[in-house]
Length: 189
Image 1: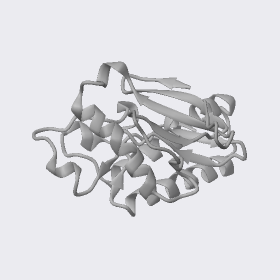
Image 2: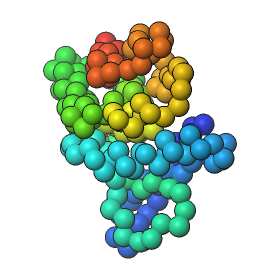
Image 3: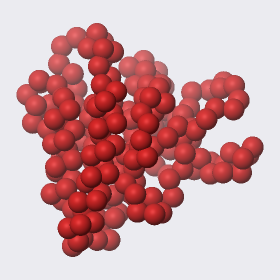
Image 4: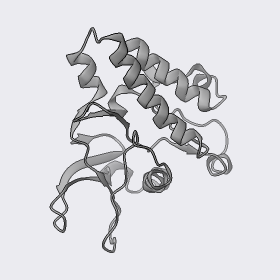
């Protein structure tokens, strides 16, 4: 389904239930990088704590895990990037509805003291009934955990085109940073 410098994402079939699932594994280049692997492991932990109909859900584990991977539900649909190409002059009420749904997804993160940090059209899926669903939790910052790790200036984990200005001045992100990213998306739509 997708390949990046951090991970490979595959469409798989749960042989027990017969349902399609998404299987995400670390990219070969990061398998020896402890920081990247820690971020990868955190994705499932984050997904299990955020409860919203507008956020990707982790798949329930039914067997022992002997390898490093994450399994999530499969969202039948298209990324917001494709939706925007297909709807270059979308009606205002549709844009408002999508923005509201993404905002509710972000609110679910923020209520858990988490900042998504990579809100962009490629990380929003529009499912088969037209609902926006936020995905990819690899850049999520969790309050109380991220502050004690590392020293010095933190790298920009999100996509620069959608990142708030404070990331570029070394101030770090906040809830407002996610809202800024949503604003960029709404402007694009």
